[in-house]
Length: 136
Image (cartoon, rainbow, N blue to C red; front, side, top):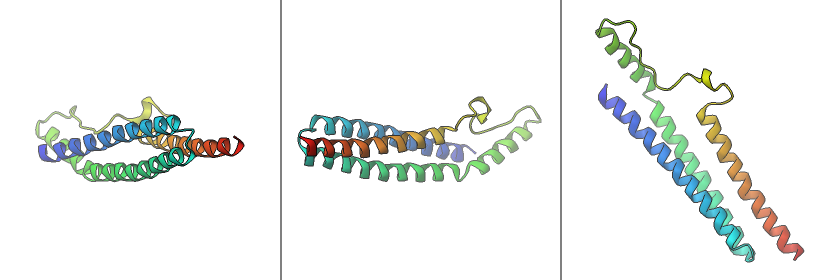
């Protein structure tokens, strides 16, 4: 049980660390594109590289999530078996909080929304920079 739980926690930490890395990359991309807004090629190049990195990183994050959750059912079963051994029916083990407290969206859905939103910010910022350069 301890090994499966440790593996689950490890994969979860990897996923969230990569999410933080993605946010840092996105901040750097937006800052770099803005600071180089007078240089059309450099600014759009930074945005393009940011979009590519963001999509690749998101796919890796999704894979980490899949790997993390592959043993979730086994972990629940092992925990339930351990609780049953204690002869205490009140002990239950659940990975995660039930979604009833925030019915609008799961954390995964919110992260997906943020990912798509930032992707569109990059795309529209690139379009804006190109249009502004054409007008000037």
